[in-house]
Amino acid sequence: GENVEQHPSTLSVQEGDSAVIKCTYSDSASNYFPWYKQELGKRPQLIIDIRSNVGEKKDQRIAVTLNKTAKHFSLHITETQPEDSAVYFCAARGPNDYKLSFGAGTTVTVRA
Amino acid sequence: GAGVSQSPSNKVTEKGKDVELRCDPISGHTALYWYRQSLGQGLEFLIYFQGNSAPDKSGLPSDRFSAERTGGSVSTLTIQRTQQEDSAVYLCASSGDPYGYTFGSGTRLTVV
Image (cartoon, rainbow over all chains, first blue to last red; front, side):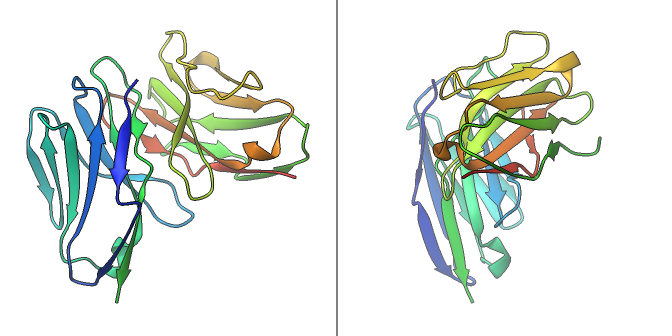
């Protein structure tokens, strides 16, 4: 099955700086890559996703890039704010499946 | 319903007892998933139901774990003879298409 690795496991940034989280996946046929944000004690929520026919997608201060050749994708958060502090999970899905395989998560702390 | 509903929100049980966790997905969503999240860990896939197809049980950690989905809607995850290592948050999600899950708030299971 699909194997997703996520780095770093923790990330501390100064408010206003950028944060970057990277994920690699094993199945070259995977075609859907969502990112979820989980605030403390709450459910994971989808914040952005990208499909394999697109190299980059932006939504305000967040963006995701996909490199299919290298089988990796990244989440970029610009102008970080305290409310960006959370655990972020990347995921990947194969072509014949609804099931997502998740990375281990990155705990992001934004220092005021 | 408007969202994915899980019950109970918290469950404390004695080691060796059986527990049932319930998930009520978003109306019309054909796919339903169970994940487990241990303290500070990522999302571990357990089982996945898609329409009337046989469920994907490849993530169930032992034969003490089982799940069913009645009438293509509500699902129950059953853990028999609970062990302390079963303590975790059990998350249910549903989706109506291949893109993006909606998660429930989870059931926090504590085995004492």
